[in-house]
Image (cartoon, rainbow, N blue to C red; front, side, top):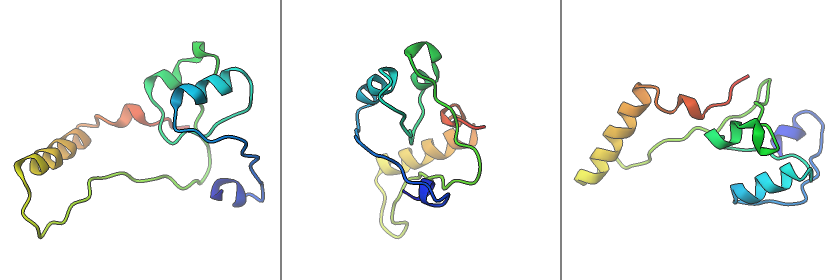
Length: 101
């Protein structure tokens, strides 16, 4: 794991899950910690048995986007998705998904 290796640390990974419910249950039951790659509104509610905190310092952050081949003809649906995502980004509609220090 690059996050730990860059600091000469080694994570003790004992379980991986794609389920947010399983993750929350394990952490709330004090089985350890987790690193979330997405942080929704429920993840910020400290009354759930755990609290999400940002990782401070220089860390690699994934960038998300819409991939398409500009030289190909795009359907009306593809054009609408691209336009909608572009406008939502411009409006800052995704900012609430970020957990910053």
